[in-house]
Length: 214
Image 1 (cartoon, rainbow, N blue to C red):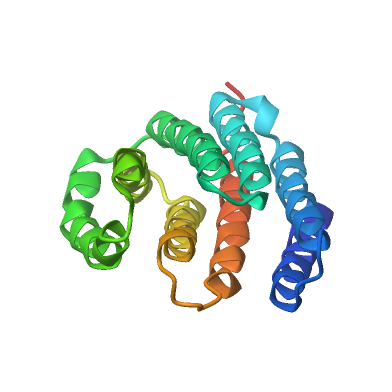
Image 2: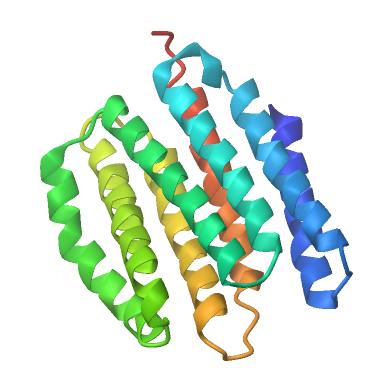
């Protein structure tokens, strides 16, 4: 399992470096290699042994597809990527519910999550075109639910890999949204991509910590 974690980190570093230095097609290659490594990591962590692991594995596979779509530019590929990650988050939500959540913890967490989402995403939504507002809005709701449920798992059994991984994934999506819709010239991927790959690896680690067979 360790070699796949190391592989993800190495290819993620090459991805960020290659994107910043404009290495042509190589960042796209590094991106899919890094994403392939996190799938292999969760597989080697025992994902096939229980339903929780299989749901996380499926979510990571949809994430792999989303990564591939986002290599291309334009609204069509962005929507395909958005749809892939939407399914990934739905699968993660299902996995967290299967793991067990404290609804008290989940609902209470919204007191922090909702103001944070509004503060971070309000300027993004003001730059989203009308035909993209609904898909972006739906995606925001689903990923908010994913984080809420991840927090809820902490009230049942302690597996901090879940909540930390989910929060990292959320903020990596913020970087994608700001890069897509805000023309600031700032390279959001410099912090967004490391958060994304670390978040996915932590979700893979949560399978290792939750690998009791069904």
